Length: 425
Ligand SMILES: *Cc1c(COP(=O)(O)O)cnc(C)c1O
Image (cartoon, protein in one colour):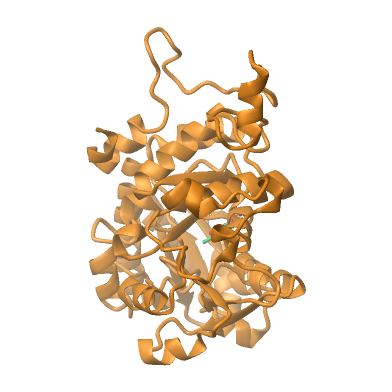
């Protein structure tokens, strides 16, 4: 029944469903450990033959309820929550990629993801090629090698706000027998469900819109259950695992092979699990995702239109504006709204941009996006400062770019604040 619900019902009612006289609200199971009656049952747990909780590093009832809800929202077959979005990206890729192998990623990525892939993965012996996602399929294909194990992109690129062409990317992934892994953080499953457009794995930084209130760092990996791991390229899923007496994940778990392996090997061995308390807060925030995303998108579109007509503004990027290069892709993949993030440049360049930021009163200068408040940021001097100027340009950060995370305050107050700060800049 739950699968048939509309998304606004799923965010409220999915995941936890209490039985008679159980707590109405998802409880915080603040326990590291679980009690058993029977030694054989515990043996079955350790052999992955019985279902149940072993240890909170691997699973926990509060965390499981959140995983179940987000998997339901995305239309996946299972999910694993992690301590952060970065941990989700790391585990999602290490689950199927090792030293000597290769990943192709869109160049328009969150700065933290870029560092993880370009610097830390390189040290681990995994090479990543960053490609311009606007290239035609025939050009993009040339970057795939025999040892390429995944294609990676964000639904809404950060911070140029380009929308990924799912049809093109999923075609290239299918042709080459590799999964398409999508970071859906900016869109959320309310605005876009990548599995419906050919993606195979979705990750989120739940720190952003899913929590929505800036209280809890967290991440999640969702498995679409729609990839053939048995195509000869993924022996880690089809060959025996010595750490479970020769268990073969694909044979034992079928469409849940990938997500089961994330939990029982990487979460077990590396340990970046989400705490029950953060899962509780994240779930509480998630309950209002639908109405928040609607309001974020409406406010962002109105602010984008206002800025586009403002004499002090040089340019505006918002995928819901006809002037954005991704406008038609946003109409196709994000029909309910283009999200809460926009970017613009103040006439006069870097200095005027900084003046604008110093003069906003309602909006706050914050290195964060995707919660109920309106935030402004200058990426070139903050989130993307570790990148060279060429890398900044390649990832869509021009020196004058101001990123705005539009909150759900009254749009008239937001516009009045931007107007007065632009006049002072
Ligand atoms: C913030 C963010 C991340 C990293 O998530 P953390 O929860 O901060 O580790 C990854 N991808 C995108 C698009 C983000 O905005």
